[in-house]
Length: 143
View (cartoon, rainbow, N blue to C red):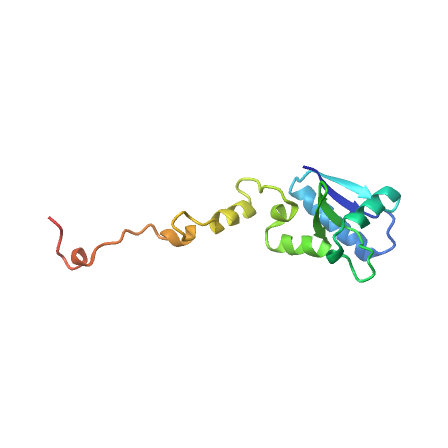
């Protein structure tokens, strides 16, 4: 799976440049393989990005601004949704990728997984205590 980040190499907006750098820098820090696709110098990239951002995710003027992020042809989101995923430690889920073992996101996913009996893993036996019957607590043991 290839993560595609649509960028504008010659954007006049410092805000867009900063957002693009933030996304790319974070992907590099996480060692996520990605491809940068320039919409400023390549009309095909610009058209593809505009056509593949879902209508309900486009701004009021209908023209999405970079950065826009895709996993292959599947839309992941824009800078704001990426930033939200980053804050929630869920960037790999946002990208549609499995989190690496031992990562914060993998540990968080493990905690949230429901155990077969329907309780959450952290509720199952948080302090490894053993339940002692009331009779034994009162000094009466089973024989």
